[in-house]
Length: 337
Image (cartoon, rainbow, N blue to C red; front, side, top):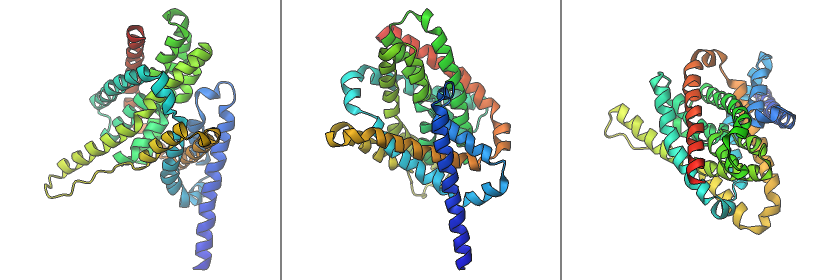
């Protein structure tokens, strides 16, 4: 019994060490030219998938990777709240916040409808819709609990968001000279249309410091919407499951993602308590380190055959909607900004 417990602890520790190594390696790679477009979180996910080549190590690490993918993810999203400065959003980004609400309200239903039209699974369609419409991998993982998504579905949605975000970042950067926008306008368009924070920063950066600041404000306006969207989806999903069961006496259980409350609380603490201000950069680094471990844990558990089988249709619908959100963002910036 003692020996068995010792082996379990070693296996659990192996999972922690492997995912931590993947997260740190992902951070280092993301600092290199070109890799910054892919982003630290997706690189950590890919490294976790690569480790699957060594099956004995992968199977041993799975003693703890399920826990890491679940609990570390929630902790990472809470810490990520420190990145969201509510004072900046209110003072400089109110117009961007209004535009973000408009974009998200339109694009989530549109992404979902397009995916379902192509016969994509309900849960995968919602994961992809949130990832493309809100804030990439963090949005996928933020709503996965409320949707009771499988690891393979979450990984596929993250992969789609990462690929398309990188492609459309390059499209926007090359299109910048012919759009006729000011640096600020271009930054807003990048923040409203691109999937990951890293994508928005990379594209906005091509328009200089002003473009970068505008892109960050617009993008964080979309990030702020992650919490209410996750709660709404949890309520809708609970209602849908109760309706499908046709059991009128079944208790109405709403899987509210309580960690989103921590996300908002962290945003408020980082924004309004001056003493925390100097620690915010370190807290955000911790957030990404923990999220990278969660992504690596997902990579260690992914089923490649499922991704190969299910990937084409959600990719096609997401490509179509990525062009739509780009056009919509262009129209909003041209009209409102």
